[in-house]
Image (cartoon, rainbow, N blue to C red; front, top):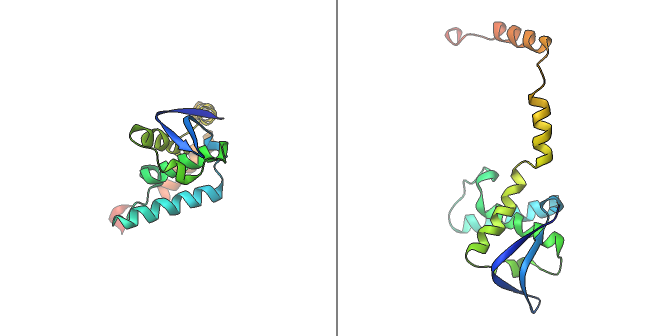
Amino acid sequence: MADKIILSTPLKANGTSVKELEYDIDEVSPENFLEADARASTGLAAKGITNMNLAEFNSALHFYLGCFAIIACDPEIDIQDLLRVKGRDINKIRKVGQTFFGSSAEDEDQEETVSTEKPSENSSEATVEFIKKAPKLSEK
């Protein structure tokens, strides 16, 4: 679902001043994801940071995913245009990318349905049997 970012500072893209950027995180493709990851990893490695394993905490990856969500809605804007944003607009784009790792309202509805279901008795019995058969710490 497309949404918009209102920029604090207009961006020059293709000779035009842009104040709003439309984005759709659901339009980010696997190819976009891999490119965002590569760009983020390259940038972090250049700064000597090599241990950013959790994508959920990688702000550089979030920023690039946000960029690709924008480009998906407006292919006339390219990554070089978006790398010229400044100040708080950087964080606005990063937050868009961060939603890639969050759950949507639809996902939350499905989680609610699953979490309110009563577990079957068979699953409880299987868990008890597994625990009984598991080696005790003192046995190791």
